Structure formats: C-alpha cells, structure tokens
Image (cartoon, rainbow, N blue to C red; front, side, top):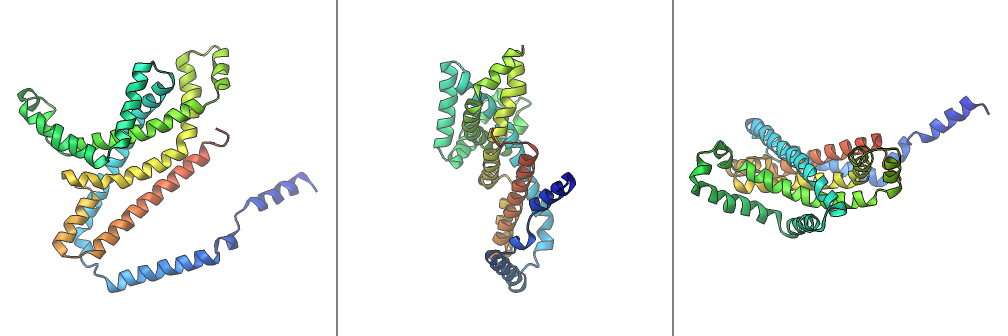
Length: 273
C-alpha cells in the first residue's frame, strides 16, 4: 500500500463515528429534553420576558464581570501562593499555607459578610478614609464581593499551583540552568508554563465553581443575574419560570466555559505534563 493510501486510511479511522453518537440513552435524553422544553414553552407564562429582558442582560453582564475579574486576580495571587509553598522560606510558606487553610476551611458567604458588614462598617468611622479618593468605591458593595471571590479563588487555585509547581520534573529545570538561563528565565520559560499546563484541567473546574459562587454577591446588594431574577419573582409573583430561566442561563454559561477550556487544552498539550 502506498504512503498516500496509508495516510488516508489513518485519517478515516480518526474521524468520529456519527452513528456512534446516536446511542439509545442519548436519544432518550434528547427526547426528554425536547418534551421538557415543549411543556415549559406551552404551559408556563413567558409574557414577562420582553419587559425584563434588558435587566437580565445587564445581570448576566455583571455576573460575567465578577467571574472574569475575580478569576484573573485570583490566579495572579495563586501563582505566588503556590510558588512560595514550594520554594519560599518557612515564614512565608507558613503564611501562604495558613491563608489557604483558613479561606478553604470557612464558608465563602461568611467571608463575604465579614468583609461587607464587618470591614465595610468600620471604614465610615475614619474621616481620612471618607475624605480619600477610595471612599466612592469603598461605599459600594461590589469591591467587597470582588475581594471575597478573589481570595476564595486564590486559596483554592493556590493549592493547585503548589502541586503543579512541585510536580514539574527537576531535570527540566536543571536543563534550563545548564543552558545558562537565569532563575527568572527558567521560571518564566520552563517552570511556570509547565505548571500551568498541569493545572489547566483543574483550573477549568475551579472556574465553573467560581461561576456558581457568584450569586452570593446578591446578598450584599450587588445586582447580578440572580438578584435580577429574584426581583422578577417579587414583581410577577411567579416562581418556576424565572428560576427555570436562571438555571438555563447558568447551564449555558457553564457549557461555554467547558467548551472554551477544552479548546484551550487541545491547543496546549497537557499529556505527560
């Protein structure tokens, strides 16, 4: 057999089997989903949706802003938290470990309330703070929500990065030093990228969990999509329709995150990392 025929045969074997996707249990699940969608559209009230559509869109925007800002800031804190637990001196190592233990061991709602109702109630008592440029922000609720979600993500992802840093083979780091790289260059070009490759699948799950934690900011008057749906329930006296729509919104956002991370994992090889 020629090389072209061999390559063509291998390509055909790598193509997904479309018939294999339509298995009996998947057909049943799709049928059940279609029936549920039909029942929800036919038997439930959705006449309120055009009136509150813009508010829902704004709520989704606030939720996404809280998600991405806290994940980015949390990851920036997680890298030094993980690194210092592997290489840092013991005082910094104990501080990082204690921070991760306390944040991971206490409820996120409690941390949020301590920041907003505790620390936030102390700031007005200091005239220097009230007269500073920070007061217009500190009097709002969203900075405390961002702080609480950021610390939570940093603590959980910091432990992930600690394991990722420790799991990078020492031979790769020694090879970089043998090529004459400085410690910073070895960290920037070898250690950090390899650690991120190892932590990427777990980062997917942590990001999804962070999305599910964002509704807690509604308890401190941040108007996210959960708060908008709660207001819709109060104004329309409906229970199931707004909650089903909220579940669908979170389900779609979660699916988008999962697909995005899978595409990123396919572009960045993680096997053997």
